[in-house]
Image (cartoon, rainbow, N blue to C red; front, side):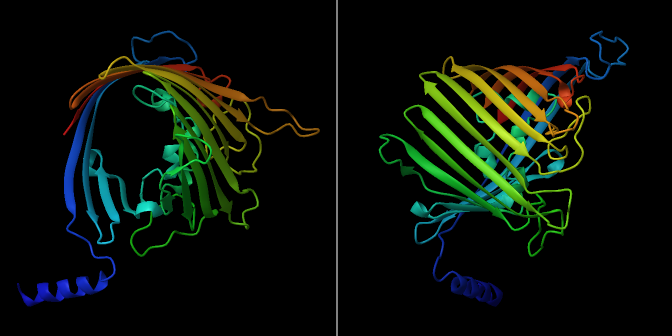
Length: 371
């Protein structure tokens, strides 16, 4: 061993005198997927006539591919704590997410990362499906999928260890906490700091209780605004869900609330709205049922209604009608070892929360291989 290696190992041993670690393990995995998708509707032209010349953009079809490449590692400290980290790369080897977590036994788990989705991914639209969430094939994402998304980057997440619920035999609970010193959803490099923005700190709290076939989750997130921005107030959003499994059947219901905190003029019913940009309040509810036919085949049906309320019902003001964007999705999935075949048909009406938004139907068949 040369002197440089001796110096490096001596310094490392000194820094880990309290929590030395055994040799960690690294692993590499990946997946490949191919899809065939078609769309049909009247969103662009406001008529259902199929244009053989391709002038109607709502009648399309295409073949697509998806490649994932994941590198992960894990290890254990002398005190029994474990750590794990990983990086997921998507097509063109672009970074999708990366994270590092430390599990401290009965003290719970701490995690930091980029593009992880944060703790909100354990709560948003958590109703059972055979393939994807109901809005995966929708014209756009439901507002429920934006709950807590401002804590996706530049935040630290904590999850407690599971503990028994008093006076509820067979039920356990966990809770999740997040905090970001500046909740603008911007990732920062090592040693960096977020640039000044409209938003200040953000935080969230979630609780999950499960057992005896029941699973219930409640989650709320908020972020504070820079007080110098007169047209923006504090943002709050939350979601709650309940799932019940009876044999091979699972039914679920979810409801979310999203107030972006903007105080701009109300948006009319025929104007497109974007969650996180439009003023007003989004209120979504989803319910679904999934059936595991056998160990390989499952099917599901889901519906979602996402209502935009312009909050314009003021005395002497002009009332702006609420607009509900609705989705329906039927799905199926079949697996055989490392290979899976999945499909859905999803219909969206009042696209972009517009009363004249039209309808869009998306059909998809996907073949996946994991290695």
